[in-house]
Length: 291
Ligand SMILES: Nc1ncnc2c1ncn2[C@@H]1O[C@H](COP(=O)(O)OP(=O)(O)OP(=O)(O)O)[C@@H](O)[C@H]1O
Ligand SMILES: [Mg+2]
Image (tube, rainbow, N blue to C red):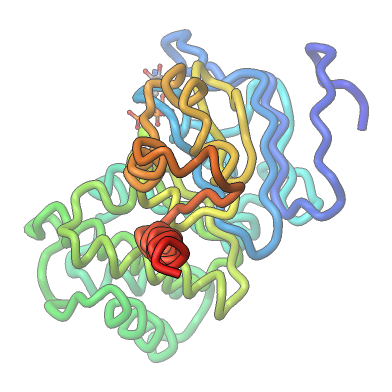
């Protein structure tokens, strides 16, 4: 691939299902939302974007379905350059759940809202209703006649997720999906994202401030700062790099903090990411001591 307009090489290998080479995206007021952003999504992976407020996570996510386009640069989805002629097919493939759920809900009822996408895809009313009922069932929303505007913040979030699920995207892009959810609904969404990948082969791109959830969920972590990706890699590598995380205004995941503070890191290559991983290692150590 040739160097981009700033002379940097941003390779998208042939396995990438989305590739963003965004040299720059500038908002109308002149703010550069992202620059020199080189980002790919691969099949059947969950990739988490972590970074401080204003880092450029939402700006990047809104490029992934062509909602925003680089001022300089290009986006490819399933190997094809995104342009104004193929935006609707790109949006069928890439479903985006906004950070602000309010901006996604506009129909008179919850059911209308979730049916809107499938109807727009050309499905019949019966098929659209079936998809909407399934998606609302998945997120656990039963009051489908309610006016979306009157829902609680967390309920709006769940309806917004259902609206995108009902479109059956191949790639799901979600921006801070659990920020306003109670712990049990947050866990429901976490398990849903996992099962979309495991059972349906869907790739998920997620912006997250919840570093513990990123540790549990992601196959790959990208640290976003000042409009670019400053590091990426496995959760074991990236989320145990305290200097890197601190430089991006982030903290170690809780499990990594406990593991390091107990002095367990130096004696093993293992890097637990979940409480189960951690307790498994600790039980193993106890058993060794007793033996
Ligand atoms: N509509 C807009 N007009 C002007 N500047 C904007 C606009 N939207 C975002 N920005 C700016 O672009 C930069 C990146 O913002 P973005 O929303 O992508 O950050 P973020 O990483 O998603 O932050 P957060 O964690 O707070 O959601 C910030 O400096 C922000 O102020
Ligand atoms: Mg954001």
